[in-house]
Length: 522
Image (cartoon, rainbow, N blue to C red; front, side, top):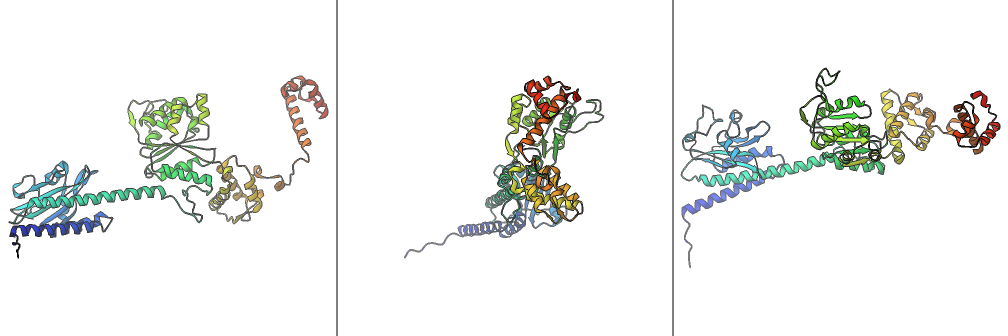
């Protein structure tokens, strides 16, 4: 029977060390998987590593790029005061050099190394002789986010090269954990950004909180807002006056990464052409007569945030050229200034006019149109979303009842019928004004049909039935037209006939039929 000779003592130690290292790496991997908050587990990892490898001290240093400073995130064998002293600049000391170069550092005896600062120890605890210092970078791809540094006494069985390898593996494990958590957080932030404003109602229809409606037409708008909010794409909101374009712009901004930055609103139609350039881009002192001081424009004020340009179709051709430059180059000059200013602004524009027709007429630049029309959103008119009308009416009723300290319990059936049968040329804005008026004039807690404006009233609701016959209605209209033509021609029948496009004989017959005296118009 052949017996296997026992392994040499040196090989046995190596084997035991490998088992110990594998056990350490396994335990650390288990720790890193236990929590999504890396700060809660990085200190236990340092403690476990220090105990298993018989280290005197260990620390994880994180690079704060904003402060351009290295600080101890977690440690083993350090007091809080020593941790606080452990601050370095990139390139400063051994840790700073590792962060800068990205290469591990091995110092066999720190008492013989001038670059070892020993800042955490202070004067009362200088390092002992034969204390080695090992430091490895924590790297995510090409970015170095920190370093692992340890101290240990050199004894006969210590292999510093093996320690560097183990430390490098642990550093890679921590870096991988950080990378995974960053990706998870980015995905969570993206989903939160996309859906944080989506509030479910009983019908499982989702909407931004500042917009009201469950109709299919408005639901398409909600979907578009969700798609574009997380990007920096330029948005062009189109729709009739009063459909809520400013509310959509607000929903896009406040659900975007720029939500904590300024949201600046500009109505291009409300500003005279002589001042709109100064309003948008600012001016220097003395740029014109009333420029008594330097003033920032809306683009400067919106830096980092969003600027909403309403009625963009009313911009003059000169301002369109300067606005196009801001969209393309992200730069502009103040009025009267020569310094070129950079801006980081997201542009959301809106219009109720046909930009295509304006382009055909030459009053709107084609290149600006294509720059603006990156992500168009069309807001449907209220007449195309009648199923949302009562939701809006209820909302405005509650709003103005609360504002005027009134108790409005309901909207009567005749009032609802009037609201539903009206064509709403002024859209949601007109509906809001009608409800505000009705709340103010109501005295019994109910909005009745007669509380609505005359434009919404029907013949039945006002007891004013239409003309008994079409012939009488046409005759009344014809008489009115004849009288207007005679008034314009100062009683001249021939000239009045030419105005109406009929012969003088037919004009005379109608004057006789309606008993009109042309002389009273002379």
